[in-house]
Length: 329
Image (cartoon, rainbow, N blue to C red):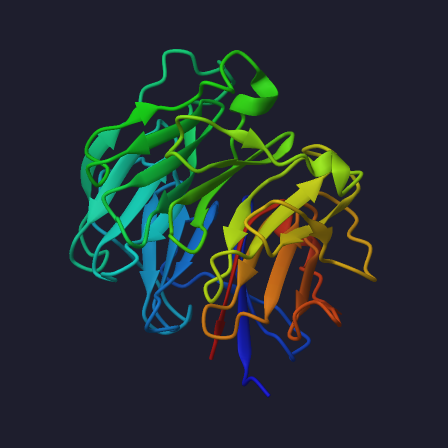
């Protein structure tokens, strides 16, 4: 049987929480964090589960002791971080995305961050906030090939390791439901199939964004608004996607595909999430363990590939949640 698993959840209004899967109590992690941290991104080091990076409204913070204490990393002040991604072949190299569509890069394990590019889409839908990068995807076999999910600006592609970006929105332009991207992942056996999530579900490209195909969630689920998509670390053909009825709905769940998105099924069988799913996490070292969080602070987990589920409700003060991660302790 797998060993102990730690779950981390980021709350937009009330910081970061940690829980041992079999324990009954959530811990709020605050030492070294900024005042009233708004946590929108969590990235666990692929080779060291105690080293975790967290994106906040005041830049990126790191813990080396599993969350007991944090320190702020060196980057420009005032950056709201929404996405953090490790390079697939070099854990010292990392990328992050901000509100304002900036891409930052670190080559020293997250200590220092340099501005790499600003992704500009003149056709982004004007919202009450600046366009945000909500996800970054990298091809494992061709890591100079990168992707960004823009809220509400569609998809962007880089072929030079993030230095320059091209908007790849041929199917999305002018439709706010399609332009409102919430996540991106790279999967497929050849590591080049790209998947994005938006208000209509999940779309796929096999030509680096030149063309996008709607994977037609309506055929498989009565709810299809998607807040994120992740590929399984051990099987690039397996995908998990968050779903809900809309941003603030009282229905949520997780879809799974085992064939690169051709067909999907509801993964969260036997439970009834009470709000839209906002994040899904697969344990990199025990991929049969999958956890997801809903907007209203529910957390559900499976340790056996979806056969059975456990519930881990956050304290009411946590409020709206935005991110989840898990790791073997």
